[in-house]
Length: 330
Figure 1 (cartoon, rainbow, N blue to C red):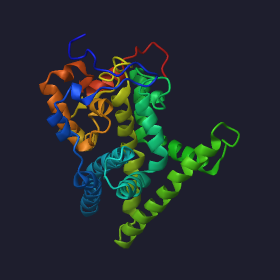
Figure 2: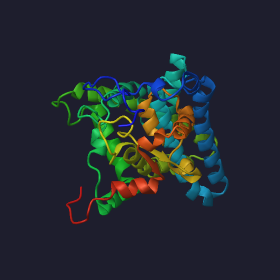
Figure 3: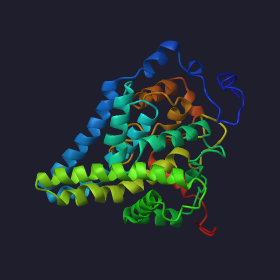
Figure 4: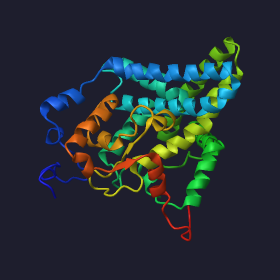
C-alpha cells in the first residue's frame, strides 16, 4: 500500500469506509471544490427544462427531429433524477425551502420520484455502500450477466415494458394492493403515494400547458415516450456504471465507478456530471457541478490511478456483460 493510502480511512466500522478530504486535497483546493452556489445548483434545474422545451419545440417545428428529441429529452429526464439526487444531499440550494421545491416539484415529481422518500433511502446507500445493508446492492449484485441477458433487459427498456411494470407496481403500492400483509407495507404505500400524486399533478400540468399551446400530442410523443423508453435504458446504464462489477466492495476508491464520458455521452447518456460517481462517493457533499474539477485535481496528483475509472460507457457494458453464455442467464 502506498504512503498516500496509509492512514487514509476512518477506523473500520459496519458502515462503508470514508476518506478525509484533506488527505487528498490541500485546504485551498478543498475550499474551492466544496464551495456551493445556489445560482449553479438551481440554474441546472432551469437548464434541464430549457433543454426539454427547446427539444420539444424543434420536434414540433420539424417532426423528423422527433428521432433526436426523444433521446435528448429522455436524457434530461434522467437529469431531473440526478438533480433530485443532488437535492437529497441538500446541494441545489442552501435555502431548505428552495432546495426542496426545486428538488421535489421541479425535478423528482414530474418523473415519478419523491424527494422525501428518496432521501433516507439514498443516504443509507451512502452509509453502507456495497455492504449487505446497502439498499442499492440489488442493482449491482447480479452483474456480470451474459450478453443475451443484457440485450433482453435493454429491449424491455426501449419498448416501454420496464416503464409499464414500474408504474403499475408504484400505483399498486400506493393503493396498498397486494402488500397489506407484508412487512413495512404501510411505509411502502405511503412512499408510493408521495410519488404517484405529485407525478399525476405535475404531468397534468405539462399536458395542460402543451394543450393550451395547441400541441396536446406532444405530451405523449415528446414527454411520455422518452420517459418510457430512452430514459429507462440510460437509467439502467447509469445503475450499471455506478456500482456493477467494481473491483473492491470495501475500498471507497473502488466501490463506485467514474466513467469518463465524451460530449455525445454527456448529451445522450450522462447529464449533470453523474458519471463522476467515484468522486461523489468519496466526498458525497461535493457539489455536483464541481465533480469534474475535483476529478482533474485528483488526476494531476496521480490519485485517479488508484480509483475505479472507466473510459466510456461501452467499456462499462462490456464488463457488465462478461458472463459466459453457457452459464444460466438472469
